[in-house]
Amino acid sequence: MMDEATQALHARITQGMPERLILAEMEDLRPYECDGLAVYRQLPRLVVLPETIEQVQHVLRSCCALGVPVVARGAGTGLSGGALPHADGVVLSLAKFNRVLAIDPLARTARVQPGVRNLAISQAAAAYGLYYAPDPSSQIACTIGGNVAENAGGVHCLKYGLTVHNIRALEVVTIDGERLRLGGEALDAAGYDLLALLTGSEGLLGVVVEVTVKLLPKPQLAQVVMASFDHVDVAGAAVARIIAAGITPGGLEMMDNGCIRAAEDYLHAGYPVEAAAILLCELDGTAEEVAEDLARVETLLREAGATALQVSRSEEERLRFWAGRKAAFPAVGRISPDYYCMDGTIPRRELPRVLNGIAALGEKYRLRVVNVFHAGDGNLHPLILFDGNAAGELERAEHLGAEILELCVAVGGAITGEHGVGFEKINQMCVQFAALELEQFHALKHAFDPQGLLNPGKAIPTLARCAEYGAMRVSRGELPFPELERF
Image (tube, rainbow, N blue to C red; front, side, top):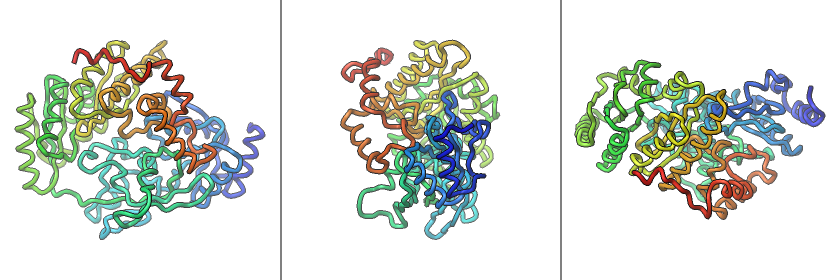
């Protein structure tokens, strides 16, 4: 049964789109109650699934007129609660916007709708010898619109950049239903860089309805060297050696023993299960470039303390090495009732220190932490293992995750690298940014969305929230981390 306000909203939306595209029954709403951060759930008033841009405009204008919050949603694979519904709001699903509109092999661009899966772009461009570089682990399911909202990365973002570095233009609909075209075919344009501003804005400023992405030629050759280490911090130090030598790998990923064992048991990628950590370092380019870089990297890894090296001998083996890494999250899901995936970024030089600090924090909270991350750019993904049915474990996992993120800030890093802030990290924004900086964020939000209807309660905390959190957690901005004093 819909209450009176929901009935009025439903009636208004049906004036501009078929009723079959509006979900109102509880069993229909239930699949939309959370994103990949499933520990937080909330049913919305309605879910709408528009098929045209005009229908998107109508929904936004209707919600704007009635003061109803709107949460845009892609595939729901996000890990920060960015698509968590608002109890009084509408979920605007872009799932039906799933077409590749055009590919220009000469300009090396593709024009796509936001519901197109990340991997589908590369599949469509393969006939031209091109591909789309950013490759999140969820690329078989996640959509390009969600990638834009979170500024997603992936295992190859060290060399080829994040989403913001690989898009040329966006078409966006504002909360009052206006269409904006940002960016274009030229490499630069006059005025403020609104294209970059919207990328990573987490659905707070507008709803993306079309994306023009940059395509790259497929490398002639790519090989992966897998290096084993007896100590996690030694593997972390090896990362800094490779980058300091002036080598930019196509990908440089690290997994600790817990993650190695889970992935190997799940996918049989050929990982050394006795290693304390492994590095996966991919080198791509011409055959001559790869051979030269591979020889240098092997020397650097041996000097850094690698106990064993294995180089992919075929394209099949290279893909298998990466498949194990990309399956790390579901693999860990098989060894624990629940896990909490963090996403912090640190300077590469701090990798050994922070990894030891995370281990100490795990002991403090009596929870196991396994690590998999984009080592080359310092983007950590500690996975906190817990049982949500055990009294107090979720709360301990939340506190442990908060301290890991604040540890990242303490060493000069950031609370997110690619998963976004969403609902999950909103308190840690109070640690990352000062009050004057947060005020500027709110000013930008107000310029695009004066009523604060787009994805409210996400990404940018109120100053009152920060004052409350500061009173709980810190004193005068000083963050105590005795865990680091030993390292």
